[in-house]
Image 1 (tube, rainbow, N blue to C red):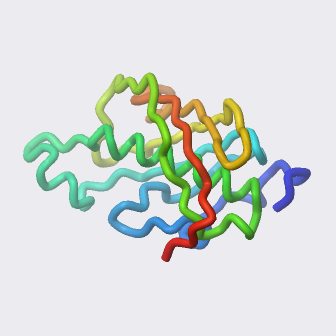
Image 2 (image 1 turned 120 degrees about the horizontal axis):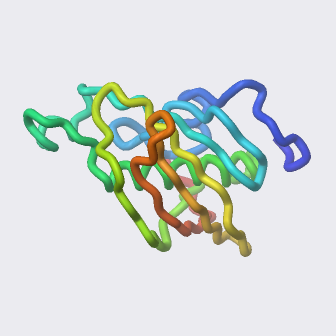
Length: 157
């Protein structure tokens, strides 16, 4: 999809996402991309389920999605936006975290939640991208952060 094409056909499903980024279960944390504006923003969806391995120990009797995994879902949604913007030549390349700033956790995310990960590009210089990220369940903000990442030339997988 070129930068001139600003919308997705409908959405990107998990099969297409796995073609774009190298993450796989149990660390693939985006089930679908539901909104997209090339080079600008995206909304990813993570359906949180009780059968995910981290819930066995975080926390028994009170399952809560670890904040670090919410941040990882933000990073993956950002990586999908980068790859979708740059096209096929970026598919399968590693996108590495550089910074995580101003992370805030406002409400626990629990099994049964549909976590919507909103990412908006703040700036891009070369292979380095910076994003404002907000994770919501419904209209409630659960977490937010500013992240920077770098697209590498390394094929992963």
